Length: 419
Ligand code: FES
Ligand SMILES: [Fe+2]
Image 1 (cartoon, rainbow, N blue to C red):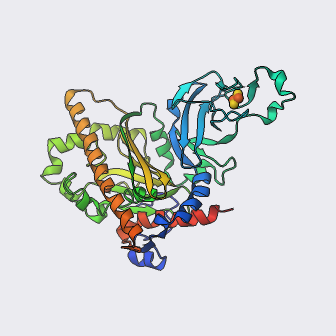
Image 2: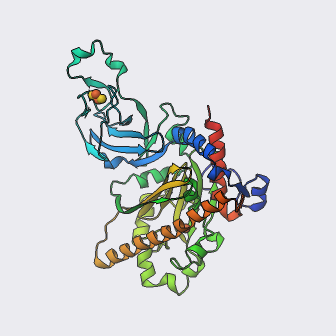
Image 3: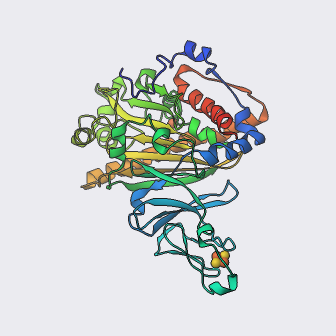
């Protein structure tokens, strides 16, 4: 199999003996349940890493903005706004007079940011532009009273926010293992959200990422919903120990059974397969061929004949799954050491063109919803088991390399980012 990127530096890491040598075959539960460790995560990872925030295409014009709230970081609220120079910037949603909130809505458009409290005006680049009744303030140094800025950059048309005004890595460095052509694929203007859901779970936030970091659970947890059938070689996985922002990649290939007669070759499965990441993409379809020609190298880097989709763990809290004409973005947001908000959104580049396609898409969306619901049925039980002391160490197989890579990276990054 081809190497997906230059970051795949450890040959055969998906090998239990190799993993054992590196201590990747066991994970202690402390990092999931410790209040102290959670505080350290907030102070390091969450304040110094790039966070997947939204789509640049959602704020196409100067003055368009969305609000990116991080309530678990002392109620931090960030305005992500496009300037007159077309650059996207991020500012604390706080007026520099007495801290009035500038934006009250999730998104909107403005000519300048005006505080509703006493009317101070900030331009789209965050500079203090106007102070009503200026004389009552005495001397004001406008150059020191601009909005407090955070770092913002884009990759593949997606906006990332880093609360650190001087991030340790550029976004490009952070995401380096992602294939370059994937940026073009993700940047298409035609992406439209088709279904999104949110839910609050009584578990540590990292458990939700774990739930998407391996495929060995699929034949069991998803045995009824997507009919199982996987062998482990259908879900190859890579870890990127040298990368700050991409922890693992997996590919899902259609199982052998999909090649023969039976469920996976049924017309329904073929139709639904085009619209759901949970099932198996019909690689013979016209849509798939068109996508391959448009963005060579964006997906299926191992050039697998039975390729279905790719998944990436984007540190710290995001998992994306990339298929021929749709993507799934899943994120986990802590609300405390033992409570998490989980959100996911499915985006498509195409619209169904007839009733059959519409039905197949609806079926595909529901299949994905059901699969993710199944994933989420596990997380609270896992957390309780860790918290109660019923289990103190997790046994990790080579098929769970993604979990090991991710949890190890958590510990390494907390250490590395401590001042
Ligand atoms: S707090 Fe914003 S103008 Fe007073
Ligand atoms: Fe799953």
